[in-house]
Length: 288
Picture 1 (cartoon, rainbow, N blue to C red):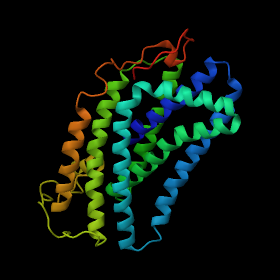
Picture 2 (picture 1 turned 90 degrees about the vertical axis):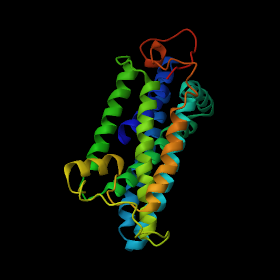
Picture 3 (picture 1 turned 135 degrees about the vertical axis):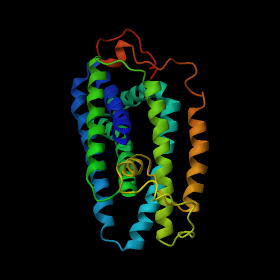
Picture 4 (picture 1 turned 60 degrees about the vertical axis):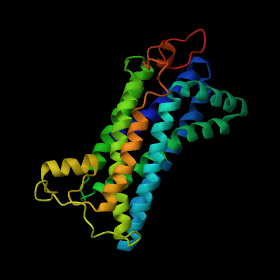
């Protein structure tokens, strides 16, 4: 889910940039744009590797403190991202076109920087949130990373299909429901991040359990593993974890699902000029 949601946002940004250059006859600018995209992807991968391998050199307390702090930061970034996308998705195309026009006027270096910034933010957020999620649900298995890779591959395929005009889906509904699920996942990451901070002795209450249902939902059972991997569910959370989970999830989900921001739009991607199938006579604001 994380790989699909975050990857699709980056794919849509790339599609908008490439389609605009092709339609305006500026194919000569494609190489700098792809260079900026490549640098952004490499930076995100390098950031993820630095988080993973750098944390292995730390003591247990330092690892827990780093993991907890980055989990809280990841949740803050992802929460900002889902609300930002919900509010500005309908104007994303016009915003990117304006930035690209300015970069074209400035030269090759500006094109590289524009593409890098457009994709790099998504890449760094994805790397941080994936690392925090895998760390929270980690049992040493590579399965979470396989899931992320499958999600990203699916997002790239969907992005290509959008560009070719072969796919029509209601992106407003897609981002609404996946955003809501991402908020639920973020709540679990946040709660586990606070648990890490408790284990690092940064916060008190490590032995104050809210409940313990390990006998009903064993952590090593298939359903316990599923709940852990998807929602970061813990059968024996502390009182602080449950409190943080509720204080984040309830208001964040209520605000996110409130009918604000998309009330005037249908949210469907159906205009040919957004899909790259044929040029349009006048610019149009996307409804996605």
